[in-house]
Structure formats: C-alpha cells, structure tokens
Image 1 (cartoon, rainbow, N blue to C red):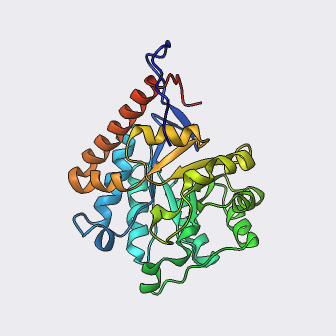
Image 2 (image 1 turned 180 degrees about the vertical axis):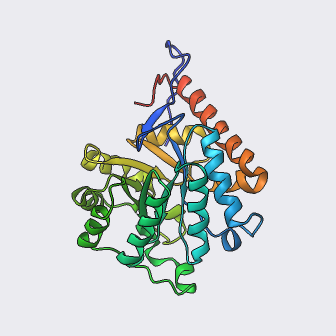
Length: 275
C-alpha cells in the first residue's frame, strides 16, 4: 500500500489529536496489550517494570496503553497495578478464558478505575496459555453478549478479521473491535488486517469503533490504516523496544517519534486532521 505525496496545499500545521474511549489523545495510537517479559522479551525488564513503562510512558506522550493477560497470573496483576498508579489511565485486555474467570478479572479492572476492558479473542489457541494449564477457547455469541453486559465499561474485542465476526461483535453491543491477526504469530497463512479493514469499516464502522493492529513501525503506517477506515491503531513491538531500551522515557520517545512522523506524513499528503 502506497501513499500519494501532495505538496501544493495549505496544510502546514495538521492536527493529529483524536478522542477515543472518552480520552483526548495526542495521536490515534494506543499501546497494545503485551505480556510475558520472561518468555517473550528475554527477561530484560520485569513484568511490573514493563507495565509501568508502557502505561506511564504513553501518558507522557499524551496517549494511553493497554495491559494484557497471560498464563502467569502475576502478569495481569502487574498491569492493573500500573493502571491504578496512573489513576485508571489504561485499558485491561483479558485472555478468552471461561466467562466466570473473565468477569472476575473485569471486576478487578473496574475496581482500579480502568478506562475500558476487553478480550483478545485471537488468543483462543495460544500455546503459552496451554503450557501454563490455563484453558482458553473461542466464544459463542451468547458468551460474548454475557461479557459485554457484565460491565458498564466500554468492552473491546481484539483479533477480528472476518466481516461476519465484526457484525457479531456489533450485534452483541461491543464498543470497539481491533482488526488484528495477533501480530502474525498464532496462525500461518491468515489474512493481514489491511486486506479486510475497508470491508469491515463499511459493514460496522457506524456501529462501533474500528481500530487496527499489526506492522505499525512508523507514522506513515498509521496514515495508511486511517485511510483504510480505522479510527486509530495499536502499537506493539516498538513499545517493547522503548521499555527494554530506555524504560518509561524510552516508551515516551518511541511514541513521540511516531507521532512526529505521522504529522510529517499528514503535511506531505495534504491531510489537515485525523477525520
């Protein structure tokens, strides 16, 4: 996917701000829910350090981050602790466990004042969960509806690729979906989010917030996702680079850098604001 450079216009100071989940963000970028510093990141930082870095680093850059869940129960707790210390400025994403276990974790997120909650439904077949003896599985429409109705917080489903599943989410009352293939690391030969995003937005874009995730490494990648219809993107691996390389300050630098790249990209394509 390419962008068209435009330089004969009056766009000189574009506005990259956007409102998502009731928060005014400096740019349409949210930190993705990542866990497992020991087995996913080589243990250079602890789980608590990583969660603190991404939550606070994102706030410093004028945006927010998500925290995740994994087979190690300490990980979700570390994420909630970071959100609590940031006065609730974060989003909790939970693995597709049994509904009673998800609802228990939703309550924990509610108690610390999280902005929103959700599940990464594409974690239904994760090997790490199996290794930890933590059962995860797909969800029926009824099960998804039960989760949505269990909380007053905005409910997010990440890991949607087919249009019909986006429509199921809309019917269940989901507040937002994230079009994602889990960073391309759970099922070979699956579609890329860019291949399905336009069709999904056309189908459900007026019913819920559509975000996208996967392969965002610089500002122009955000521009492409926005042009395809997403309201914002998730940033994953670069958040790890920031934390491991420079802790909280590193995360802030990564996010500020990508925001500046986005602004430059907006100028060079003649785009005044995110809408």
